[in-house]
Image 1 (cartoon, rainbow, N blue to C red):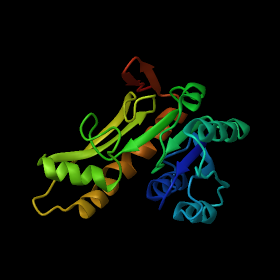
Image 2: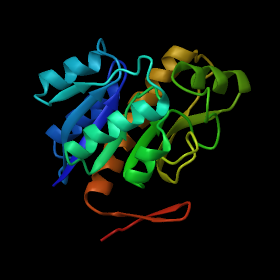
Image 3: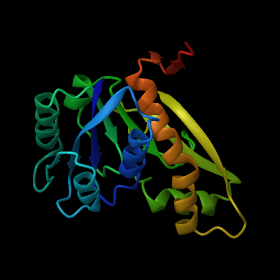
Image 4: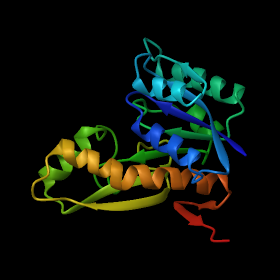
Length: 208
């Protein structure tokens, strides 16, 4: 049973999707053992509390990225975490933690990477950009984290059709419900069940 840490900064809707998936058996090869928030006021902390999951607040404050990453790494290794999930975590990780947890950190991004990703593309800004560009299909991507923002090997993707009536907020909610909340728990279970093999940029999913 692998130990999972979920890193959050805000409302924690993806954290809730993971908690729900754990409760209904879609995640059965791992357990959410820790929630780490960069924001002491994050509603995600209340979600963790209601689910009986221990939580820690590590504020960025005036810390440099390297200093902050060092504190995160120490916390994760101290709790013997096997998988780190970024679920609405609003900070770019430094190289120390990426090296320590190579191919053991996954992130969910609200677009079909490589479209609308990288620095500056987060939260509602992604959906604003997709609508401004006029694409007909968007979606979500779960990927391993490397030194390039949103640049790691892709694990799963799911498409969501854009409607003529869409504005950024309703599109954001639909992408969460129809894509993020489905593929993030699935990717977590695949990792915890040792079903993922990374070959360069390619992630192979074992079927056995």
